[in-house]
Length: 548
Image (tube, rainbow, N blue to C red):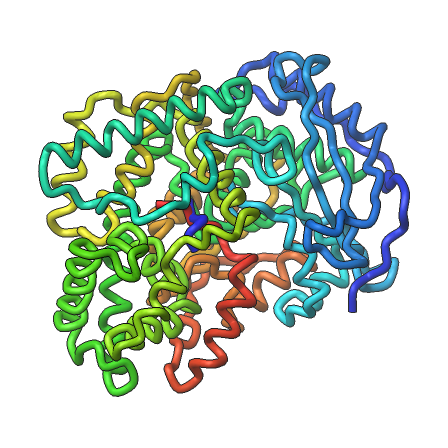
């Protein structure tokens, strides 16, 4: 879904304010499903105001890392949609114009990579870097990214000093005793207190429905009658809620690697489900490593690879590697392998190098870089937003007995991620801001076909989430990548999927029935240098991982 700071032929644009055609003013009634009607009215007022104002596009600030011809701008939205004329915050947006002819252009395509806490501002770089999967789509669409509220340049929130946040080595997430659990509970409560102290005014408004309202205001500011949206990971939940609140404002909607939208799953149960899926994908990776023992020398069976992992954890627990890498830092590094196939080879290479005597390779990969002030601030901000949104979206259990019982039970058979995930989410048990009731996601009149794309062995967003959303959105189509598990399917090279995604965006057409595709190609160690290069290139534009 969900978290991760761990890991975490461009077109020419016209400077100035852009209003492309008449904008359909949002109806307040569109946003009443399970929501405050005054917020719906406020959202309609904000969207109409944004349509009149448009966006003043300029060259992006030099330190944003967005090269020309990408341009940047701002959209004002209410902090509190029940008070549309009250305090406003600015949402950072960027775009690159469609590369095709005027007749080919179909509007703007907005993107969210997940999190909560991920920035979509690098999306236009798919054009400047000539990503071949998006060449034809970029002829038809302006690629538009944005920082959601609280993220990056959009009224960023914080819960603690970034340098202290990233500093290691941290406690081993797997507790050895009740005393360890008490320490972790104390840390989680302190983190919740820090969020309230540093960002208290923002916390009540850091909800998925408010981000959805922001997106509809952005749509209006872009001059778009209807929204074209690609959401990955948590971005799929944004898309599902948008489809529910604004069905008649949707033109094209793709959701990739789907969060289970059931009210009962948001968010406590969803995280428990994720623990099971992570163990499944971790086991997949161990089998792959064992298959390539001639390259990595980590064991020729999954059991032997697991033994190496437990040995590594024990070593790091007793004496942090390089004085910096303990079990928590190891999980932060190794979790990228269950998340992304592109990390399979690089992760195994680093581990193999360590076993072969190269300690520094692992320290460089897994230890926090205390000199990276900007990167550490971004990691802390991403984790703060992740926590704020998940804690605000739904009511969380406050009983420690329930947390302890559920996670102790899960850890027995799913030890890779369970306790790390529990501690990351535990601040929600003592959250100081209001916690809402999740939206009841379902299709309403006027919603066009939604394209759902999902791998069956996804660790971060288990496959059942896609099935559940498919049931709820009548007329949707599900593309299943069977036997694959990389998070973020639309970024993988798989012609069965790529051609259907492109066809949908260019024509709106979907298959007459759901489609099952064979998996994309499994990484090959002999192409290690290519895999590493691909991982580096993709890292900034993958669904975001949380800081554990």
